[in-house]
Amino acid sequence: MKYKTIHTAEPFTAHPGKAIRMSDFSQALGFLFLGACAAFALFFLGSILYFVIVRGAPAISWEFLTSAPRKAMTQGGVAPAIVGTFSLTLGAIAFAFPLGLACAIYLTEYSPKTILVNIIRLSIANLAGIPSIVFGLFGFAIFVKVFGFGVSMLSGSLTLGIMALPGIISASQEAILAVPQSYKEASLALGATHWQTIARVVLPSSLPGILTGVILNVGRVAGETAAIMFTAATFYTRGYPDSIFSEVMALPYHIYALMTEGTHPESQTLIAYGSSLILLTLVLVVSSLAIILRQRQRRVYGL
Amino acid sequence: MDCDVKIRARNIDFYYRRSRALKNISLDVLKKRVTALIGPSGCGKSTFIRLFNRMNDLIPGARVEGQILLDGFDIYHPKTDVVSLRRRVGMVFQKPNPFPKSIFDNLAYGLTITDVRDKEFIEHKVIDSLKKAALYNEVKDRLHDNALMLSGGQQQRLCIARCLAVEPEVILFDEPAASLDPISTRKIEELLLELKNEYTIVIVTHNMQQAARVSDYTAFMYLGELVEYGDTERIFTVPKEKMTEEYLSGKFG
Image (cartoon, rainbow over all chains, first blue to last red; front, side, top):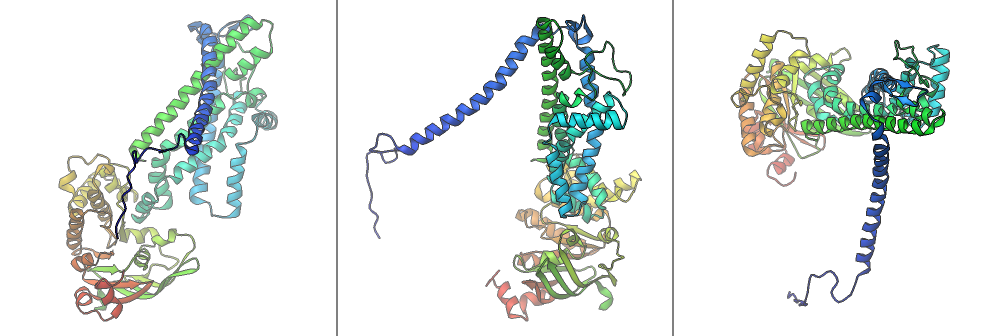
C-alpha cells in the first residue's frame, strides 16, 4: 500500500484557511468567564480583609489588647473578650475532640455495616446543616436551664462543642479511612488485636489529618455569635472569668453588641472594627496552623 | 511422613458472598519445607494462603467450609484464638508494608504488642531478626530512621524481619517479590532458602521459575481448584495433568 503525502503551506497551524474557528472562540470565552468568576470571588475576600485591616488597625494598641472596656464601651480595650473567646474555644475542643474522635473510630472501625449505622452517619452529616441560632436555643434550653449551668462558659463551650462535633467526626472519619489497609493488615498479621491496631497504627497515622479537621472546625466555631448569645456571652464584664460558671465576654458577641447597642456609634464602630481584626487574625492563625499540619502529614506519608 | 505435616487443609470451600472462590481443596503443607502455590491470576492461590492465618476474616461476606489443621488443631474452631494463631503463622505481603515508623520500631512492634518490656531483649531480638533477614548490614547505622526511606527490596526484607521477630512457626509469602526488581528478588529468594531450615514456608507466586528455584513442593491451582500437587522437580519435569503441563509450557496463564 502506498501513502499519499499531502503538502500544505502550514500543515500545523490551528486553522489553515479559515480566519477563526468557532471552537477556539468558545474556548477563549469559557476561560475568560471562569477567570472572571475566580477574580470576583477573590475580590470579596480581598476587600473584606482590606476594610477590616484599614478600619481596624487604628484601634489596635497595647492598651486595646490588654485592658477592659471603659466608659460604656466607648473607650478601653477588649481583653476580657479575647480571654473569653479563648476559653470558650478551648472548652469546646476539650469537649468535642475526644467525643468526636471516639465517635469516628466507632463508625469507621467497629460499627456493623447496617442501615441503622448509615442513618447515624447521615444524621451526623445533617447536624452540620442546623443553623447556629438553633444550636444556641438548644444550648439555652438544655445546658442553661435543664442542667442549670446558667449563662456560663460551660454552657457556651458545650454548645460550641456540639456545633463543631459533626465537622470533627467527618474529618476524623476521612483521616482514619485514608490509612492504607496494608498497615492494618501488617499489624493484624503480626498478632495485634483490633484495638492495638487502631491505637498504635491507625491513630498515629491519621492524627495529623484528625488534628487538621479539629482545628479548622474549632476555628469556625470560635467566630460563632448566635450559639453563645443565650448561653455564655455577656454584654460587659469588667473582670475575667473566675470559674467555668462565669459569664464571659467574647469577641464576636462584643462586635454584635457594639454595633447594635450603645449611644456613641462613632467610637463604638472603631472598637468593633478593631475587634473584628483581632478575631480575623485569630481565625487565620488557627487555619494556617491546620494547613501546616496537613503539609507535614503529606510529607511523612508520601501522600 | 504424616508426622511431618504442619498444615493440613481438608475439603476447603471458600465463598465471597455468593461466588465460590475455592473448590474442595485438600493439601498438606510439610514442616520446614517450601511449598509453592502457582497458577494464573485469580485462581485463588492468595485467597487460599490467607486462610492459613485467617486474614480472610476481615472480608465481609466471606465464608469457609472444611477444615484447616495446624499441628492437628482446627484453626477455624470457634474457640481458636486468632491473635495467637497469627503469631504462629506469620505473613509477608505482596507490597512491602512497613509502618511509617522507624526501622527499630517496625521490628519491635510485634514484641511490644505482647507487653514485652525488657529493652535489652527487644534490642537483641530486633538486631537478630534484621541479621536473619540479611538486612542488618545495610541499616545498622540508621535503625532509627523512618522505614519508608528504604528501597522497595529493603522494605520487603524489613517486613520479613518484622515477621521473624515474633518467632512464627510458619511464614506465608503472598507474592513477596511481585513488586521488586530482579536483584531484590534474588535476595528474597536466597533468604527463603535460608529460612526453610527453621520455618515452614508457603509461598504464592505467579512466577513459575521462582517456584522452581525456591520450593520443594508445588501446587498448581486453576479457577479455584487444586489441579496438581507434588514434588517440585516432578511437577516441572513430568506433570501428570495435561493442564499443568500446558500452564508450565506457557500455553495459557
